[in-house]
Image (cartoon, rainbow, N blue to C red; front, side, top):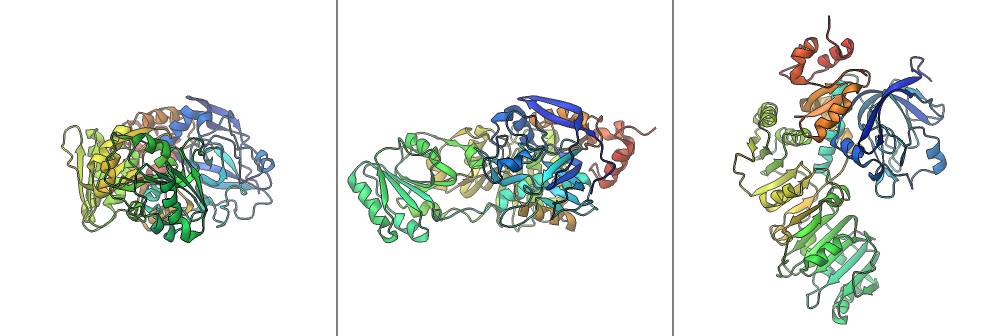
Length: 568
């Protein structure tokens, strides 16, 4: 069912090498294959992750080849599959229209307006998973092909192209993806037991008491157990705890030779910082490291790979006592805010921090107190202008503080970190009070080390966690909020642009000079970037449709009708 208005070529932004983009004004629009769907892009949000792909290019874990989930023969049939050195089109915060489908497409139809969920967790790469806007071309072009064999979630049958109403503006729908990532960081489900049928490593220093394993094994039984013990007595203690399970224990005498990222759970009875850092490298994605100090002190700060906490969902727990079960006992069920929480958002006035503050301000949780922390007075003032009235309306206390000028007192029960700075992670830990949750939302690269006082972290039972991306359910949650009128995602919009302004938009996001999100309209190929505050001077007819300085559907309609140029 082809759309006769589909052109032969299009404008596209392509990453062609590390740090290098081109504005391709004649990229071919591919024909759809039998199982394929052609999307016409309405709007795309610029994300900090786009800048990471730009600089890493082939080194990015999601630019690698797909090694599982779809056959090489099927992948070869998809023109938008561009792993390795092939140029790619970034852009994963997308709303689009289906304009053509192949004759074997079953679950999609032409004319549907769709929100694009982009994280293909069912398609594995060597170090991550496939994603729209990475090893599959994204939305910074006028048209893109997706394949129905990719965009149906195995097991659930859910569509990655989520139908949306005609009413919301394209910008509002495109911005649902980053809002869904924020949502996912709070609703993420945490694991409070050993992984059933997982791989357990137990390490005991000489003389350390081995306690609490029996309680952990009573709650969940792993598939295998490896013990590193320096003497036979320690190994026997581990074996005794295993007796009720019937599992055998493989014994090792050192960590040397154990598989990197080979264990879902690691329980360490000891306090040696070097050994703790070595154990972290043995932790599998979504793995838990439980450090049992038994009253001992760690002799120095521990280098924690906060990139793995964010991307691999690794977790650090433990106890100053002597029972391994105590470390797992304080893992929360999720990352959600609680009644009476004092939340600090570090880097609050940036695009993603803005969303965290708005989410908290509109939560209506009884006794919630939110402190937005940043170092930019102008951006803080803008955040206060938008979030302050929302918080007051819902009974949420809110403060907006410049950390260079104000004293920030510790004792927060929730700290969210928006800036990928190891020093700010250490600051977040310092601000965290007993039982606090520390949400590492910032996209730290894997291998980013933060030197943390792990002993103090465990003493306070402050839970360090992070998430990356979102799932279909998260997208649907925020879509429902938008469609009910509970959330206006446009409150986070700072600037609009056509294709010619994408380089400036990427630079603004990377340089953190933007006070909010930037949305690209691919149908305006020659328009540069314009901040909303500049619209009265540059595009007054568009500015006339702003509401209290905020973007609206009417402003978007005028922008598209004018072609991004001043009206005569």
